[in-house]
Length: 337
Image 1 (tube, rainbow, N blue to C red):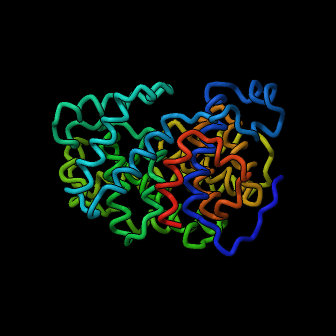
Image 2 (cartoon, rainbow, N blue to C red):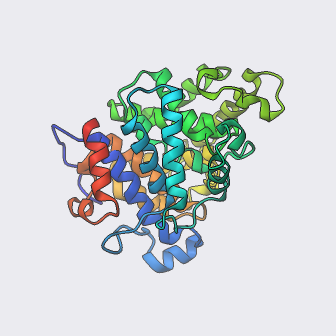
Image 3 (cartoon, helix red, strand yellow):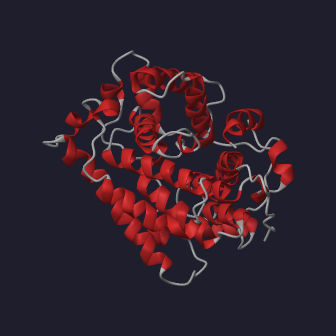
């Protein structure tokens, strides 16, 4: 267990963004292994050391960087300004030679459609709520914007590739969790705060950000469309509460809150890892990486949450020079510390 140093300037934004990358790097080699195989390779505590110099990440961090650069370049946070910037960054990622980390097929399919120049509401994969929607949303949670703008940005960046209402809702909740922690909320408070937000927003369809996306769903109203997403999130937050009501058995957290391939499960299982190891940030990453599910995404989101709670002092100091894209992570996070 690493010690948490109390820092008068915790640099929470950097802690969150670097934490996402660290979790991604630790989960990258375990993503398609069983828990038994991970334990044989790394021991019962899971992977706790970065491998390689640089330590490579996956498309999770690459796409989070794409979102962060789009936000960095935006002169205003309005849908008509941000959408083309996100589109350009996603397309640049899609054709990059570094896009060789087993990227998600939903993102690739949607990018191929976006590249045709059609409206994003038609390009998106309308039935997908994969965790690609929220694995990259952390930069939205680091912005100093009002909650309506945070919600719009989170849902828009998700919607460009994942058009299912649960991908939208889970992305908003993921960004909101990062915001709450960066602003000083305790990790233990998150389940209740997120459930309250989900109930409050259950029928709020953000037409100014989403346009007519809801019509592709077959629902009769925008409110009915978005309510499906919030209901999925409330269901999995209920599973999280049930898991936290019992002592930690040390087993795969995916058994309790899902394997994380879909957005709401990635959120809940990452939260479970973060809450079980609230005072051991590296342990939270290792727990996320020691799963039978989408280990890199679970560990990445756990890192974003614990890093936002503790700041850069959560992480071994030497890691920041070894992680891939360290320069970009520093440049994009530092202005928000």
